Length: 518
Image (tube, rainbow, N blue to C red; front, top):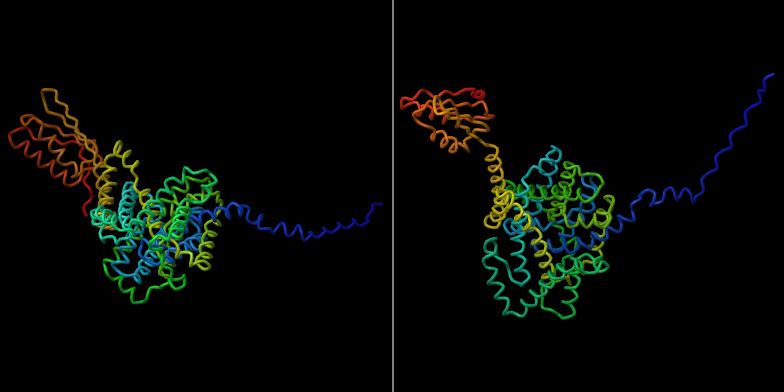
């Protein structure tokens, strides 16, 4: 008989102990890179703090507005998708443009400009236009940064000397030697200039310090030492004015939105959008080369930048971009996830809320020195030299863009650079070649190849008119990829003139198909 005794029941699994349950939910298990990100966030915070304040002061707005932009860039933009490790905040590259906008339209209009900039960035990201910013000529971008650097250096040298800078970029450069000479006769100006120069010296020499010393970020060390020197020696230098975080928040009034109907303000919005977007996405490409983590999603990053700028506009704060200095510090400090940049925004918020009075001790010449140093790094001297050796056209675009920004304005300078880049590309694309075969008897055979456009028309006609007038000519057009209307008309006119002296009519063979009408 078969045994049908029941199978003994499986013993129940013993419940997990509270200790094992807690360990499975520990922050270390949920956030395996928390330690690295926490340490990196402190480094980025220490780098960002003096730069946020310095950019705001140089832009002619309350220092707290720079901190607000840094907070929004860390917490809001930092939480969004796009680039995992790059850090956003107020950038030296927009200082000149912000200063000009505030001087021309007033501080209330700044919020409207930044809000409209954010809205345009969100729209471009939604339309997946972010990737196309990578098609902008590198020479134009480098020239833009170089022009910004020149104007920034000139303007901040006046701040270092404790004097007011002229309005235009050309005047800043032309009147600078006289202003520096005049400062030699004032004790207050000399103290201010000396403190700013000492700040630059600290930044330059900081890389040569021992590694333990260099664990403190250079900008923080330079500002800290300058502040200490100003207090110890009671130096007669200007310091940062403090209004308080909440008192500095100035949402734009509804009346300011009517200014968007003006062409001047619309042009400023376009300039903000173009420069902020290009700088952010070029920074993202550079940061991607520094680490082996996830690559940047350019369209999502553009939306994230736009959301941050829209919120900054509502708060009346400075515009933001991704900043390569802070981003590089983040990567080099060992950050692994976006938690580091979010935490750096939290530390900025805590500092602005708990220690706002500490800003009042920071000397303005020290902040000016930091921005002079930052402006110098925007001028790609090595890039200009290498381009001149191998690609003189690109070097010319870079220099002309920079000088145009200094001489005219940011927006017009960038447009001039873009126009030059397009013209250069069109010129290079219209390559044309004429090969002539003359056997001494019979018709002269001429072969045109390449792209026959109006840009190369003088070269084509000079070569054809140099052919013997008393010989028949066979013009072979089979090698042409493109023949525009201007060239076609010019070739027909030349053929008529060549045949008018009694020579056998010119024969054109294998002519490209005419473009469809309309």
